[in-house]
Image 1 (tube, rainbow, N blue to C red):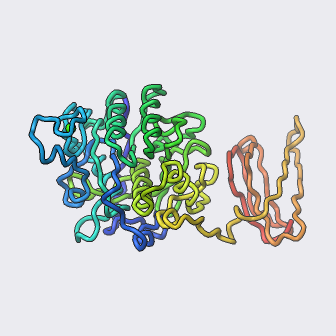
Image 2 (image 1 turned 90 degrees about the vertical axis):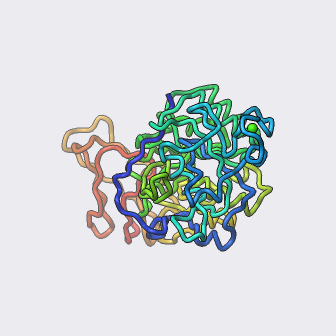
Image 3 (image 1 turned 30 degrees about the horizontal axis):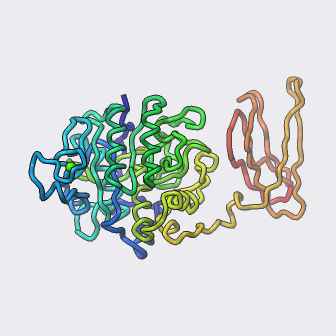
Length: 409
Ligand code: CA
């Protein structure tokens, strides 16, 4: 059983323009000055289907012209599937990928709700073609077999990107092989990191964690740039972050604001669509590198996702690294130190270390690993003026920034 990502619609706040507030977004407005997308780019949304009758989605649906203009009941284009006009439905084993759930239509709107029509929302790519491939049922579950058939159909039809806001089940060699077939066809595969707030490096989530290098695994952040409380992560197995909290998008029942790595993933697919529109000849490998290497640095996801940042349509199109904030200690010169207590140590013992960087104006203490016995042992941080600027206890893994001191010691 392959389960749809859990979603939550408890978030009530909606923004009429469908964009996240306060600048933590994928820079779509700036990107649209360069391109709004292209009808030549095809994104397969592998999900619960797509409601192709939604006003905002209908103009951007991929259509199989041979089937649209062909005879009912006949495989007009000879691809082995009869009447596959908008895609396929491997949940009900027919050729109508109509969405009877909502999840796939929501993801589709984020990728490519059409722009400038005065209704609803605008997707990251205003012009794009969305192929609906359904293998998740009305209840949101799906089979391994359906997932593999979906990926293989999209590969056969030669899409540019497969957007995968789903996951679950154990390792499957067959599923992995279908993703490898997509890779060999030069197709990017975006995948939700999952909503289990777990470290995927330690506990894999499939398909996001398969070691196939067309996969871009996506964590979710909120509009303030914080890693979403539900989001799974992984310093090596999750690649990028994208907005995934309170995302307003299209469903068969109107616009809904939903949260999940399911909602973050189609943002990345939409950014990929813009890059492909602007650079039709870019290879899948270069496209993947571009998405990862042009992320905007975000302290909340450092040590949590490999790129340490949020996907940006603008910087991806410009092929530029976003500017580094000079006040951000992450960009400062690094001086490595390792400190630990004697073993064993006596009760009520105090130990003191001095960290000194001659010539520095400020010092930030960043831990790659911090381990003390929670609430029994504490570490106080005292600046050169003798002021306690921070206290820590317990265990922390990966890139935790404790404090910044103006004093050089
Ligand atoms: Ca056909």
